[in-house]
Each structure stands twice: as C-alpha cells, then as structure tokens.
Amino acid sequence: MITCEEFFTEFGDYLENRVSPELRMELEQHRHHCRECHVLYDSTLKAIKIVTESNSFELPQSASDPIIDRIMAKLQSDHK
Amino acid sequence: MNNLETRVGGAREYEIIHSLQLVEDPDADFVARAQDGDLEAFEELVRRHSRLIYRALVAILGDRDNAEDAMQDAFLSAFKHIGGFQRRSKFSTWLVSIARNAALQRLRRPKDPESLDAVELSEDGYFGPRQVRAWQDDPEQYYSKAEIRRIVEQAILQLSAKYRVVVMLRDVEQLSTLEVALQLGLTVANVKTRLLRGRLMLRELLAPYFSTNAERMDR
Image (cartoon, rainbow over all chains, first blue to last red; front, top):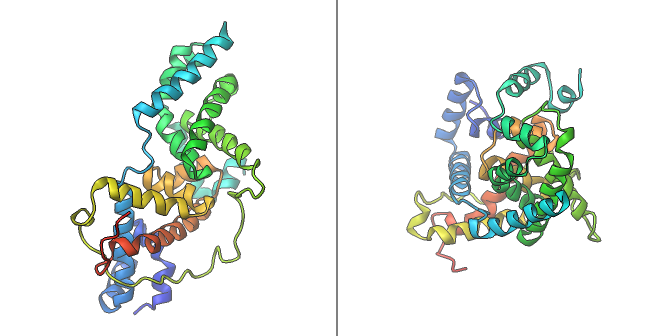
C-alpha cells in the first residue's frame, strides 16, 4: 500500500489522468482507505470543475468592441 | 538540442512539440494577409484572439483595467512586428508572447513588480493542504452562476502571478499543459509544478464557500 506522501507525489499527474493503469489502481486503493487523501482528490477535482465552468474573466462583447475599435482606428490612422 | 527542446524538456516532449507545430495553424491565411498590410485580416485576428489575450493579461497583471490597456498595447505591437513572424509556432502562441512582454513592461513600472519568474524556496516542497472537509456536489444549489464567477475571480486574483497565469491558461482558457509551457516559455515540468500548487491554493481559497459545512457566504 502506498503512503500519503507517495500519493501526493503522484497527485498532479493523477488529477490530469496521466498515470499508468497499475499506478491508478494503487492510488485508488489508497483513496479507499485514506479519507484525507480521498477528500483532497475529490475536492480538488471539484475546485477545478468550478473554476473551469465559472467562465471567469470573460471579456463581454460590449467591452471588447470599443477596445478593438480603438486599436483599428489607431492602425488606420498610422496607415494613412 | 535547439532552444525549444532545451526550454520544454526531453526528447519525448520535443517529438510531441514537433508534431504540434506541424498542425496547420487555423490563422495562417489571415496572418499572410495581415503580413501584407491587410487591416481587415488583422482585425479578424484581433477578434479571434481578444478573449485569450485578455485572460492572459488579467492573469499576469491581476487587474482588469490594466489588462484592457495592455491588450491595446499588445495588438498594436503585434501588428508592428507581424512582418517578422516566421510561422515556426502557431500565431496564437506568438501573440501570447507579445502580450506577455506588454504586460511585463507594465509590471516593471510599480515599485514592487511581481515577477513571473520569481522562485520561492518552497516551490518544490510539500504543500500541506489545510482544509480536509468534503465538498458539496452541486455548488449551484447555494450560489448563482454570477456569484460563483465572482467568488472564483476573487480567489484567482489572490494567487501570485506565477501561479495565476498558469491556472488561468490551463483551467480557465483550457489550453493543454504543453501549450501553456510553450506560450509562457516555461518547461512542462515547471508548468506542472506551478499548476498543482496553484490548484491547491485555489482549493484552499474556495473551501470556505464550497465545503459541505460551509455556510452560504454573501459577497
């Protein structure tokens, strides 16, 4: 059985689904027996999902259009 | 070993990068026209990439207003230098490097610039998570989408620039780890380290809102 420290060493690749099937099985067995590592894994995945789906820092068209207009006006005046 | 290989890592990664570079750039036609001075083609490129560039700039600068000004600087600089773009990378990768330079010039102006390359002593050390409570399955039971977005934005802005920029490009803009490495001129290993630490820090910052015994927190 792997230790919590070993679990954490592989944690980044595990989150990204970049571990071998054998290692994945060991990590999942560890999670089954260790509540803290299970919660760490589950909550980090949920945090990533929340961040990804939040659509944060979207630049609304109402804000981007004037910026693009200013850029193009500057380029057109330099181009003349 | 060329510069790209040195920067990104070992031979296997170099092969992946090489194949990535061979993928046709969807911007190629517009880039060619813009290189001939076609402003309409350049405007199309600006529209296609304004969201990516804005997010990269917010990530580096940590400020929306500053990012809007830097976005203008970045696109003006891109047009000025587009003749020198030799298509060895995708146009979007080149554009992010221009935006990054525009942002770094702005960061040099304050008294205490927040360096993207600053190395913290604990970079490779164990980051012990402090919050071990389980999380709710459906955050939208407790918060509206607008509230969640505000909570997430506030948390991301609390990260230091070196973590913020990696999290923004990987988890918000959803680029691959390799693309993030190429766009920021970092090694893949470095991106992975920063991404994990950034994600764990975000988890700590978001836990008061989303863990099972969190009370709804009004913003």
